Length: 270
Image 1 (cartoon, rainbow, N blue to C red):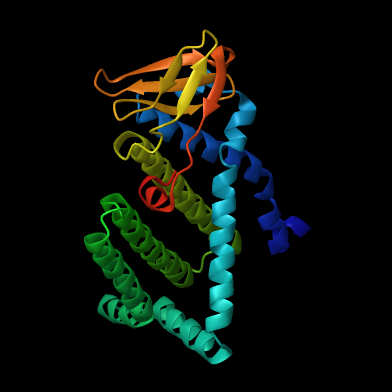
Image 2 (tube, rainbow, N blue to C red):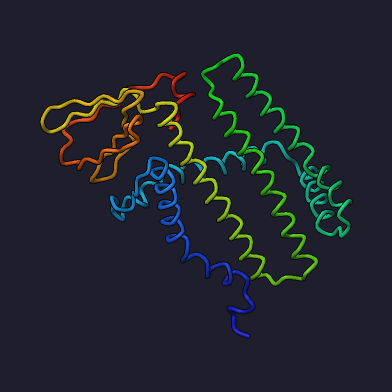
């Protein structure tokens, strides 16, 4: 056998070269999802560099999220609790009977499910008393928490299948990477859809002022509004006609973005 065959680290290293192309792919998915909401074939208006930079803010969000989870777990857990969690997970992996697996899952996820239920109910109550918290925000938070739990269950189930089928290390690594990739793709699509929904239905770009080279001024309102821009083009949507104007950036003399107050940010976050 060669070192590549016997060294698990080398088996993981083989996937590193795909990180760059995968980030580009995520950037494309994000832009296509967002602009397709308005019927725009955005690929026709993009430079290659824009695909990567369009994903940078999401990378920051993901990194901050995982740092937060890591710090929270570090501060709130101790070795005995960690051992209990690992033991519960291992019992699920080793169990063969379905009904016992279900009971073990309920025990394993008990605290998480209670916490998620409290968060969802809290957001629902806040929305009832503070209408500025939009229905979509409650829905997004709920969907995010539920899908995170589903992916946790899927990851344990995959590990359980590996255990009973005696899967090789390289197969385990490939499936784990595929699962993480799928989660990121779905997250990017959901986030981009939310951004597009925010622009169209919550009017998050209302008040954006654009001055053209002929000194004509356009101000976004509830029916005619600024969608976004690429390096070379800017997009203005007309909701009643369901059409979008595309202008080259060479025609834009000035753009003014109004400052959003905190309560507006809660509604129109983009």
